[in-house]
Length: 113
Length: 112
Image (cartoon, rainbow over all chains, first blue to last red; front, side, top):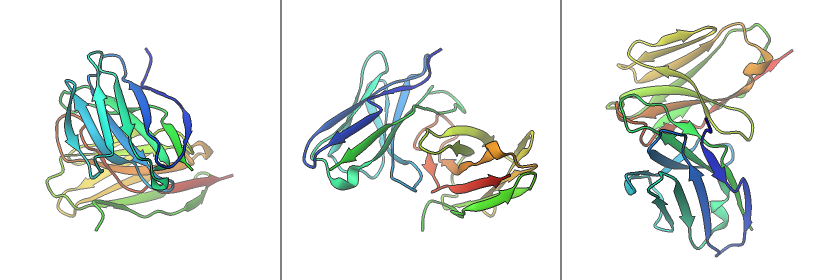
């Protein structure tokens, strides 16, 4: 059973560019959440997708957008990249049930230069 | 004030020691609580869930004090493999894992 998979694992982009990160949830999971983890900090919630809609959003600007596909996979898009967007981006999947655990992917390490 | 606060450490302890981590949270409506472990440059992994009065799993014991909005993690008989960052996590909902709020983590190094 494949766990949560993310691609790519590493990415280097130039300030002002746009980036798309991808996530495939664990088998049986229908909910995907995205987190940003800066160096030395805990992960910060970006948003969550369920039934192909954004259900909750953290304190992130509109430059951060996402999508969920019918197969539950998800994309995170970041426009107009800033140096401060450099971080580890984590995808977590879960099942929209009671007391479910969130499983994290290995993350995408984005460096903006 | 941060929603979830932890002592950042680092904690450097010898093998076999007992170490305790503390965490406080600000949202009194929070419903579920977790400790995650994160190895260097890896993803967070669930260590323990903490429900109602707390629970124990082998060498690990987690406690919850709702009145004080305080969570703790106790590790007994520390092993070298316990070296990691321990993240205190709060979920405002008792339902699906939505909008987990993480502390900044406490770094533990177990020394031989």
